[in-house]
Length: 326
Image 1 (tube, rainbow, N blue to C red):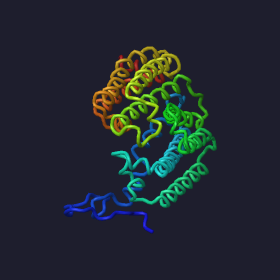
Image 2: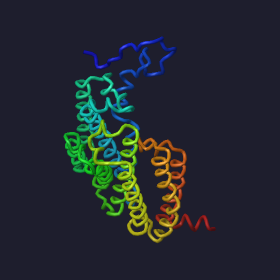
Image 3: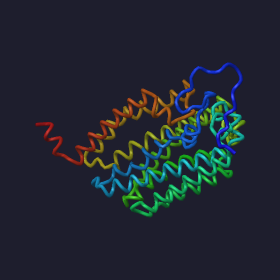
Image 4: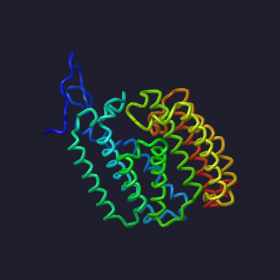
C-alpha cells in the first residue's frame, strides 16, 4: 500500500504544478513528509534552547557543541510529537478548515506510514543523544512524557492543555542550561512560560472564532471573552517578568538597569502588536508564523535584539565603550 494517496480532482486539469507537487496539484510525498514535522515550528527549539548562551561566561567550541546537540535533539523530538498528535487528532482535524489539509488528516499519508516516520525520528534522536557530548537530557524526556500524556487525554482538559504546551517551552530552555551545566534564572523561566501562554491563548481565541469547539473538546471550556482575559493576564505577566529578569538576573552587570529601560518600548511594541494581530486582525491561529513573518513584529524584535546585543557586548567588554567614546 502506498503512503501517498492523491486521487485526481474533478474539473479541468491545472496548468502547472509547483515544485514538490503531484500532477493533480497536491503536495508530493516529500513535501508532505516535510510538512508533517512542522519545519517552521523548529524555531521554537532554535530560539529557546540557545538562551543559555546569554548566561555563558564564554562561548567555547565545547559549549556551542552541547547547545547544538540539545537543539537537534529537541527538533527531532518535537517532530515525532507532531506526527503522534496528527495521528491521534486526524478525525477531529478533518472538521477544521485548515487542519483538514494536514497530510494524515487529508489521507495523503497513511497512519501506518506516520508511525514508521515517527519511529525513524526517534531512532535519529537516539543516535543524536548517543553521539552527543552529554547524557543530561531529562528535560527532553519529561517533554516527551508530557506530550504522550497530552495526546492520550490531557489535551481535552481546559487550561491544562495550554499549561502543558507552555511548559514545553520552559523545558526547551532548561535543556540548554542542563546540557551546558549553567544555572538557570527563575525570572527567565517565568518570562518564557508566560510568553508561551500568551501565544497559545491567542491561538485558542482564533480557533474559537474560526471553527468553534467541534474539533477540539477542550475549547468547550473557553470563550472568546475568557481568552481575552487570558491574553491580558499573560501579557502583563510577560512584561513584568521579562523586565524583572533584565534588571535582576540577566548578565548585563552594571548595565542591567539600562537594559531594562532600553527594552521597555520594544517590549510594549512587540506585545501590543501581537495583541493587535490576535484581537483586531483575528489572525493568531499560528503564533510562530506571526512571530517570524509579521513585518512589524520581526522589525521590532530585530531592533530590540541589536540594542540588547550591544548592551551585552559593552557589559562583557567594557573596552568597547571606551574605544567608541574615544
